[in-house]
Length: 167
Image (cartoon, rainbow, N blue to C red; front, top):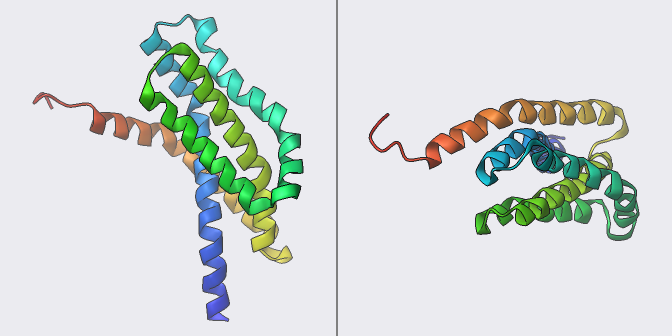
């Protein structure tokens, strides 16, 4: 009994980390403000970034279900993580407007894949009687990530910016 419980928790933990990663996408509003300032964009130009994320979610939700039926739930979640990682890696190579459009688009596509495939994957791991509470816990983890994302980003920014002996 104890071994199955540990095995179940070992399978559940990575899925909950994916819910945590999904919550970080809510940081897109704050990120678009920084892109606006860095690229000297107008409000109209900057507002396209959050819209892109949700637009791609609209476009990719149904095709993700079909993809999931073809390649499986686990592979779809892994693909979503790869696409999300690529979207976060793109700004390392530059900060142009087109590159940011591509980055935010990939973020939306990765998030659509993740949100559409993560709950069905969880239903493979958790038994029927605990599924509802596990799904609720996953949404709780996502909400915690949404709450903590600005603070973690702020901490990361302060660690990356040299203090030049002034702090």
